[in-house]
Image (tube, rainbow, N blue to C red; front, side, top):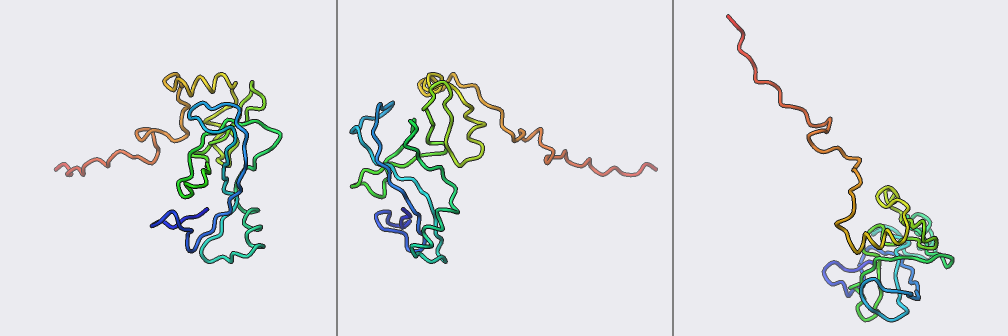
Length: 168
């Protein structure tokens, strides 16, 4: 999956990203219109420039890489984009974390993501609520960030007072 930065039609020279291709049957498109079957690619391993690219190393890389495998037992809502480095293949990839939501239980839709804060920013909600937020983003109430605003940060200190001249 890793591509040459100067020419994305060519493979990267040093890095190796293990990608798994999944064939998906689509029930409904929220946006866009494709065939009822699409192919998505999920990164499931990485080998850096100094690592060997043997079959054993590729399998080992999958055990170290943080990803959530797709399940045949679940239904998903996915946010995908065309993988530009393989335009002739019409492969899709997730466009941001979390790009996939488990909608098997429509009363409790949850993100599936290796991003540890996904569940905080996308708490369990009904599918209808999530689809309403997609259709009307102006209705979304912002979730407070765990980062304090700059004026409240303990790291931002007021300037020291100007030195005072001693009184005679």
